Length: 137
Image (cartoon, rainbow, N blue to C red):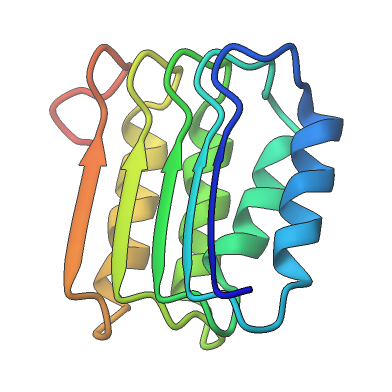
């Protein structure tokens, strides 16, 4: 198993379910390309740790995570950034969708600092439409 695409858009899934899904993916030893969409789910505060485990996975080189219209905030962006900045991360391509969430300046600044530490990244796309991101984010 080296490529996974999962779409849970609008499902009544919570942090617990998202944690189980991300834990399963984190335990897959040969994953390279992962796309997960949790748009409109009930992810909130404890989900970010699970997402951090995906960003620092030792074999994933392409990662797409869409969290549009969820209750996530800066904690999620910071946690994902922490994973990206880890020495274990092998990401080359990253797509994040934080549109219509509570992500703000603190989360995007921290994420940006983490991205700056990854010389291996070749492609980055981050969507923050209708968020709390202001001038400093």
